[in-house]
Length: 205
Image (cartoon, rainbow, N blue to C red; front, side):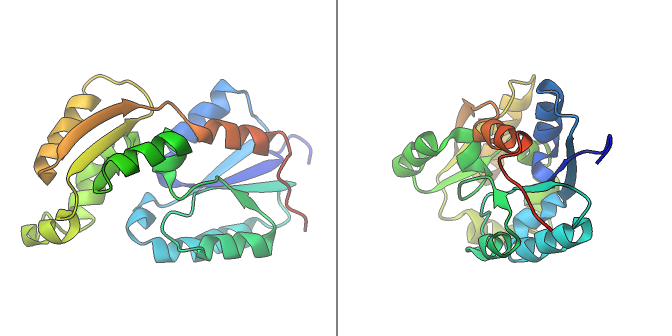
């Protein structure tokens, strides 16, 4: 392999900032990162095929691959691809679970099933991914269709950043939801990438 990265992390674009930060903090120069578009958040039925294509494009170039997605609404389709390829992913149903931690997320869900979650990335791109991405900016009448069953917005913050908590409050007001703020840090993302970086997960050609 020479000086080339030994492991490729195929990641959701919504996790790029956090993964790059963890790579720097933990000194993982042997880790390369390639991201798929964050807009796939709104089209989960396309995630499995996009990940499969990314794996195929990099086959033979790395000793190991790891997928930085949870199931993310694919209904098991992503797991079917990864089982066939012999590649692991982050445990959990979605990024909200692995950022908050499984037990904490379960408690949040049990306390209020009608909860809409935002991460740092989704809040920074709220207008683009939520309002414009779902067409609500052009068709406000869609708001009840998408958010009529929600009662609360929980902002799961990876970092405490100036202005972001207030931005979360504003997002909740725009959606007509109650607001809750929680600082999660990197959650289970840290441990999953640590395990992958240590060569626990390998892809064989």
